[in-house]
Amino acid sequence: MEAATPRFTREDVTAGETARSFPVPSIADPAPLGLAAFALTTFVLSMFNTGLVSNAGEPVVFGLALAYGGLAQLLAGMWEFRNNNAFGATAFTSYGAFWLSFWAYNQFFADSVPKADAGHAVGLYLIAWGIFTSYMWIASFRVSVAVNLVFLLLAVTFIVLGIGESSATDSVVKAGGWIGLATAIAAWYASFASVTNKTFGRVVMPVKELSGK
Figure 1 (cartoon, rainbow, N blue to C red):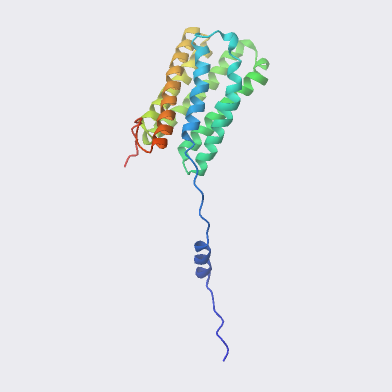
Figure 2: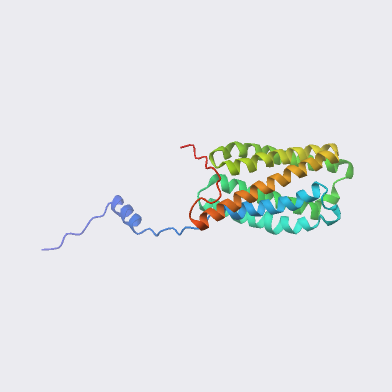
């Protein structure tokens, strides 16, 4: 008597493939890195915008914009995609691209813009980033109070700096620089709180989560 030949349905095959699926390795939270990279680069640039440091030293910002504010944040954004965090991925990737574009403009393109038009061009650039930051601020109401404050201050920073550049008003640019310093401090706090809380395994520095649950 011949043994019956087993018959497998498509559902059986699918179930078998699911059972043999490999576990996906987890990664560390990239948010503290992204926030720290943004904070430090913003702090240094804002020191020049406020006039607290001579503009003669401003080229030091370009290396930071490329390596830390740009590439490090871009990497953080890619890892946030891996973490299935749309907010973090959009934010860090976008601001990483902001710093890279800031570096590229100053290194390669600034001399091509007529001086009479440079202020309006940079002002448009900054205000456009202010618009993006404004809607990210709305989305941040489901993240944490700390992150929400960062985006609020950053949106104001971009808009004030954009107005100052467009109108060639040094006092407005300096005001934007001071708000930028506050933004950097808020971002540093959010980064510090996140990495410290995860390292200690408990809430050491509160950020007040806004989960909406």
